Length: 156
Image (cartoon, rainbow, N blue to C red):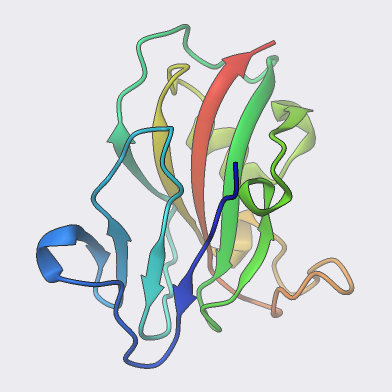
């Protein structure tokens, strides 16, 4: 199955406003929230936050995540300053698995308590991501707010 991700910059649109949900001013997502659908973000301006924001789009019905868990997820990450997708397991066509304790603190805090089978948006301030020292070659700007769409497929 081919998966397509879109992040529009400038005044691009995903489509009819009835097909999208505004998450923040300048950030919308397609309203088809099933985990079988590929999330489509539309970015039209700089996104900044000083606090972690968690938005549940689909409530899972499985077990709740604990910090000690290893997760199987599909995700995409978008830079709030550029609107560019810098990483995506959807685009690779393969979910990622990792111990929650081994990722950025915004993921640790933002995914703890999430239920398997859910889709969640994390809007993570730089202080809970990479601060002014993003990984070289990552496409993430120093001090950039990050936006993630995370589908929690399973707790391993």
